[in-house]
Length: 102
Image 1 (cartoon, helix red, strand yellow):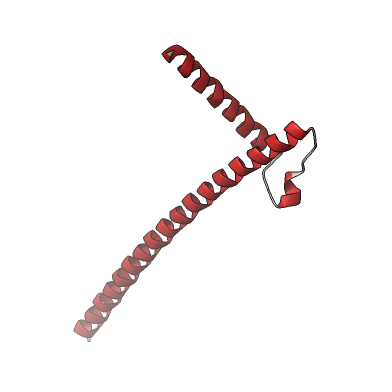
Image 2: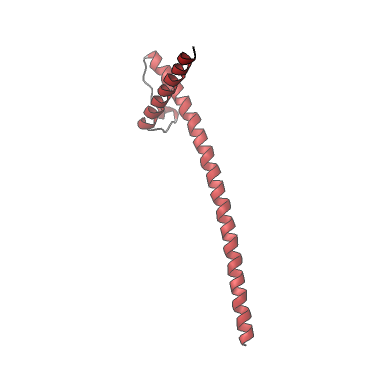
């Protein structure tokens, strides 16, 4: 009986180890999938923000107001302002580089 109990305990430990390894691999795959989805979402958000900035520029040049949410954009005012400021700094940096090279 002691041998049977020992074999059963060993079998349970092996099964537990197998399940643990499977769960670990499943978690790693899920984490990798999440990282890929987040990367794709960030890329799409970057493209959408660039599109929004171009649209805002067009409306600013016309002297008209534009409400981004009307077209499904979900950026906050702070995000939009931050992107505009970053773009202005980039333009200034590019202009300064061109001026220095001339």
